[in-house]
Length: 84
Image (cartoon, rainbow, N blue to C red):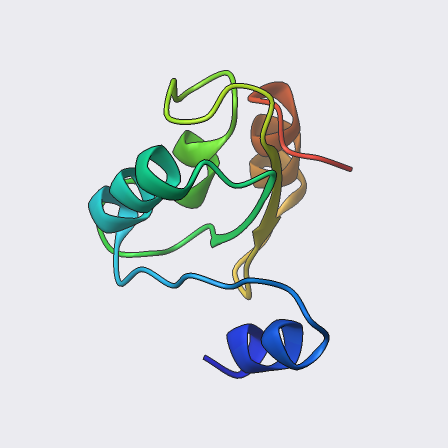
């Protein structure tokens, strides 16, 4: 929520979701240009929200954040279309 508040304070329109299912539903509804997702969010992993994995929003730029990162998870997210 802190990141959402910080981005909103900078004039960006922000939507949040509690899990992968809600995030994909919001992406279909709002059709955002950018998404910030957590690799370890409830449900599907954040990397499954990347453009090549999800038809929710073709062309979306996704940033995957995590406190549990590894080189392998970063490479997987980038292969799926996460922005680097």
